[in-house]
Image (cartoon, rainbow, N blue to C red; front, side, top):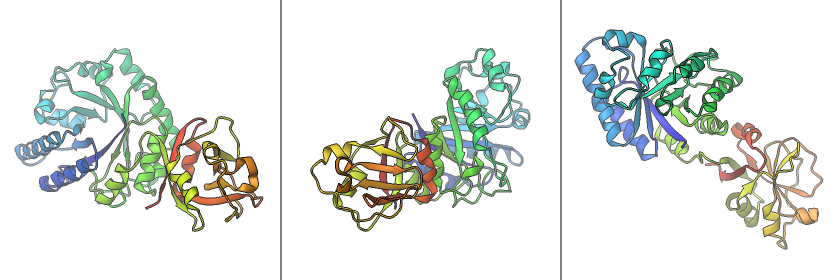
Length: 362
């Protein structure tokens, strides 16, 4: 099941603001929290006490909490991979190992007596996962999560991201990656120029980042990396259809009520005989055969335009199409809407027979 998540950084925030943020996130259906214990410098008892309070509140809200742990914390708290009682006492559901051990230790950790999940770093091109799997871990307790990158241009390339992610999905492992809020002010480090996993997401609207990650079919959980995302951003994310590609569109002023009905309320699927120029959704021409579709807006067609054929195209009248390329309009095709510019690239992720939908851009 696909999920949304947030991140909190107790070393950089206060408990009251974190609790309020968790409350808002849960209101919009968020189910997971990423957090990290980067250091225990200062009043160790207070740090741990505040951490427990925040985690306890999250658990009351039925949110899963995964805590990122560095090897330095293992040493500072005198924790052994053979005894994870400290994390069970904290109340977390699992721990994320940004830097792993030899593979054997991680495999042993997946059999911990507390039922904690062990999450490993996905953003690597080495044979770490294959090595770990050779030690026969408990796969039901092994998950993967990518890194995030505060430095502009340091985020993962899309091709590398896909290469790393596919390895985890091939083994049926749950996966996660990060998107970046455009309203949040901080992350775990002083430098922050956005905080995405994939570099191409750094300047995109937050909902488009999430749509893209879900569209790749290699990521199960999408987590806002920086804090605090605005309530408006969380609301937009909550409205995403995680299972079906849904494009935000602007309709033209001359679009008829029937054309809007076809765009927004009729089911659509990508017809199986594939064209280089358009994605065809043909059931509307069958359902509305005999209805009138006069030509009213027939400019040349641009990639990302939504077309409904007019009566001049005879048996094609009422068919909906998404333009994959710029095309000359014969004067028979009504351009009735256009996909939001930032997400036009997502049409390339649709596959033959895949279902899709449209929503009016807010």
